Length: 635
Image (cartoon, rainbow, N blue to C red):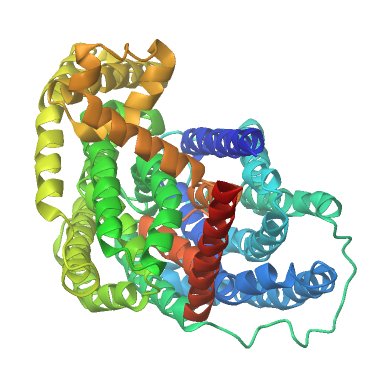
């Protein structure tokens, strides 16, 4: 089992990391092909490519996670292993989602107009042209999600982790082909709306959709391996579409609220369409923002959710508090560093995605504004799981619903009163503020209604310790970036993409080493608990009579318990869920990803009856084990 878990985790991790790296490469190639900041082409394509994501998240994503995922899990326990149900499910997905996709594709002008109310007719015409090619992605994103769940139910995780790699490869190839056929426009200023021909839109948007098609269709090759041979079955009765659990329905409501807010944000940020930082540049900044969250917060949260759920079911409140404190402090340790490090590297990092230092400056400011909310966003994500462990999804919905009016009012105010070049920055700052506000509300709810206390003083002390550790870290990073010309418009570190990458790599490695040294000097128990087991495997453990070993005995015991517990609790199923979360079905903004993850998680939460049965089963197993132990003693 251990070898299987290690092999599966490695396959999933490598697929996810390669996919994310290729996602960055695709973003860089796209920016070099049609521009990014102040590019009419880039903003039009960003608007069109966001439409299938929004529709998938709002309709197909909610339906699949709230209704079909639990039914797939239950169907695998049937006599036929769920074969009949899977055939019906896939047929139903093809019919319903195909009809829906056909409808939205034909309605591309209406949908594009809905999201482009602040665009002029010429700009909107280019968005519509791209949308006709992009909207069919709704069907293939949905089909990919359905078949992935079928394969996951049979413990076949590799295809859905690696299929996005094919998607990115095809998309990159399409961008290169477009540049070869029609020429590249890195600045985004050399190609007007009238210059776009039907063949150009088909090549650019069509290749993106082709990647999504391959991502979905390749999964059919693995159905026989899971014991399924797809045969169309139109007997849909009993498929389970009439059941939406109350737990998942609140998450579905959260998706709706977030999509409404996202729609208003799109309208506001499109005021800057083709002039300065607008939708395309904001999406790139969000991609960078989500990288440390996905690698650290999502993975660690998914690993710990299993134990949190078990302790909550057994009513071990003190243990839940301890685990929440441990997880929150560990996530904060990484996110505080990521915030500071990415802010220090923001100008050269932004230069990697921009064609000029001037454009990089504008993108860097938006990125730094978004990074102010990174710690709060990751902690809010983690604290939500405590609510989910207690079958409470209503609280998260209420928090989003209560803050939505403030969010919408702030976005509208930013569009109306801020200069056009600061609209994206203002919205990013607003999101950072509201994320922090939602976290504070969530922590208050956990303390007053769920746990009684949250070990807040310890979390605050740890946060201060991490902040102190970032002072020398930031100083070293700033010196390196400044010395390499990363802060000057004409400096070496921003004169080309390669130079910017080298500047980021060197300063990043130096800041990692500096932060690790600071944590050791500050004797951070969180750092020791996370890294000590790995370091002992590399360098070996000190002797049992070593004074150093005795001095750090408490930290060592905590590290061993953390590593052993969450290493063994990271089952194949939870590993799949972790990497599914870090590789979204469709690219989206942070709040949309958070809502999608909530839907995916809460659709799998057991009912109270199932939890009671689980508790009785655990008690029965403990009783039988005690009988066996007593008998062995007598024998």
